[in-house]
Length: 263
Length: 265
Image (cartoon, rainbow over all chains, first blue to last red; front, side):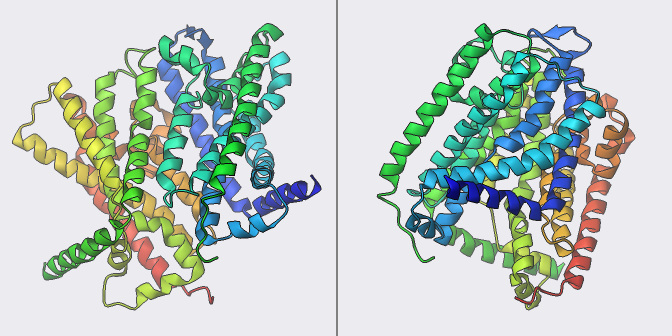
């Protein structure tokens, strides 16, 4: 475990090199917060609630969503594809380490860096400049746990697509397709409540909404009881376990076909 | 004029070879095109979901939004297809491989852009054309010869705006170590182009109209076809804005090329 911790710390430190980049990320976030404000204001057009959500709730959801988005994108797929192309992955495989845990450790380090450098400043701006109040409640207390499960699920998708690079040389199209499917179907851009009823009923059971919709709803509507939150977290935890098991089984297959040219 | 003809001929020769080389990797072409197809439809899916709860967005109907979005798709595809190599400019500059572009009796920007022709971008163009035909049939827009010419002119200038904004951001690589953040920001801003600019006010509307004029990539020129009676005189100036921005971008590029000293590695 100690060696994985060291890897996570290393990837956290790498983030420090790109301080200039964080400024632009925060700037991009602020512009997005503004655009989202105007967009949703014109969608609500003065209506009290839409689909059971007030303007403030929806805006908090969408605004927080954009910063959570940065946290949960692990880029493990791009990393693995790059390492196969360059042959670096061979070096990893000779180490007495588990590839999945190694990639997870990298992702965790980068996520912690982004949390400190992008998410926290954006949340501060959100509350101080845009005057959005974050309501307190049980949901907020469960948010960190839910976010951790969401990271695990998101990572499993990225890692799975990364393993596909063992089979095909071209990763751009697959990564892009995965990204669009997750972004649209997870409620990262629009709360699930706005989806057509039939689609919503299906999406609630899929792993995509467990990445963004679940943790974001915990913050948007934190004043509900265990009877609401427990099933939400249950679906999340189940998918996390299922996806970890599936990706581990898939790794066992994929490793057999891996060919590395050069290095 | 003769130079232009020569460059065009050269461009076709270079791209023909490039496409032949890429076609060695048919699976890559197919998978990338599928990815491009999905990413072309993402924002449209967002509009579709939103219009389940609302009838109009700041007075614009869903079909009008589809038209604006189709215009946007077509306007951004020249950037994708012809200028895709600029995504790698920062790597070439940092690793010193950019030096090779100084050693040919060719315009450097031409030489650099000709090294890549993004085939998957054709998917984006096709999606855009398909949606434009669909939306204008639904909206019963009558395409007179004059309108078609107007469409081509406005699409051309919208494409110039889009190319100029992104390329100015990539040129940052000549002066800063990692230009990715600047490029990422420009790319993110571009995504706001298909939204009605009328939803914004204050600093945002001013910025998107005059400073980083992404409003001219899709929304303002689309008004010429959707609501010709409401168009502000500024929209008729959009070809000039496209050309002026492109010229500015070329000037910045020239400054960057002249100041580049290599990395010594």
